[in-house]
Length: 413
Image (cartoon, rainbow, N blue to C red; front, side, top):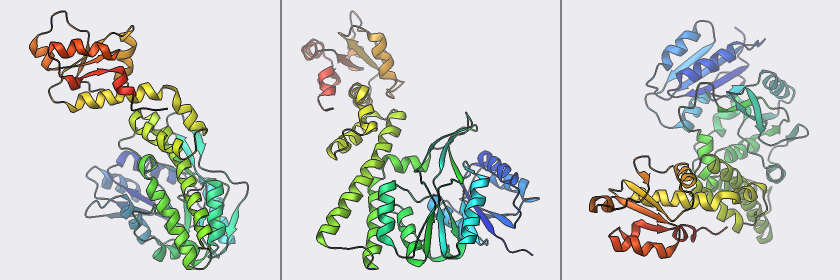
């Protein structure tokens, strides 16, 4: 029996349709070496097992059903624990491997036996339009870093703004390098562990496509996006973890001035990543959160960053209206929102609905003779502060009568 060269590691959970498509794509690859597909199922309750059985007859699949769902990180680790190949590569059940790029990475590993992990940039991919979109970092050439060259690698990561997430691993090295890390973003500690034990490499040619929009639909939020929109302390923690390893190995200076510089680099790396969060939050219409990120980027000195400049247009009004939605939704028993004093309420209503305003609350014009019951169940938005008094005098709850200035005074652009 030929030794297995490659383990394709697929963690999955309740994604049977995505898994079927993933396996169909892998089946089309024409490997001229022995490989296996290791699937770790995080206790799915859909028909994942049946999908696996459908392909197992003529594909080298090893399937492991975990007794309970312990989260995605544990499930990814489960695939690596079961891998038998010389090399291991991860692929999410709704993402794609690029065949030619993967072969290129495997050849590179064959030619460089001291390299334990081979990283590469990856594409975001629109599965509906069937085209590649953006690439996560760019390299002009392949590069190898010698064992324990922590200072060189840290500068490389900082200057290229690299996230070492997509890689081909030498499976034997995974046994001791892939360990539980949570507060520190896993990719940087993992990189430190690999570098502590051997050489590492970064290739210029991608072998992975991260599917942002799928032709099958997205049936859950992307974990990577969730981290990108809020997990900045994990990113910073991961960098500091990497620096700690370097200082313990005597490869990174730890004097007062050195630490000041390193702290600045960690801060700037994290801030740059937060600009991605700003874009994602605006795209998902989470305007209040986007404003919070905006304030931190402005204070951090990135006021001229393209993402920050672009965010200024429309952010004040959008964040103000989402604040209104939050305030109105918080008060029990509110069924109506009255708009008063605005020249164009039609456009304003459209904008309010675009900030996730509760659908159960009707946006209405003021009735000529409001009943007591109507007043009890209604919030009001007026154009100028002096208009508030009329509604308060009629019996509307004072803290549910908002002037435009009430909403924008906490938003400073």
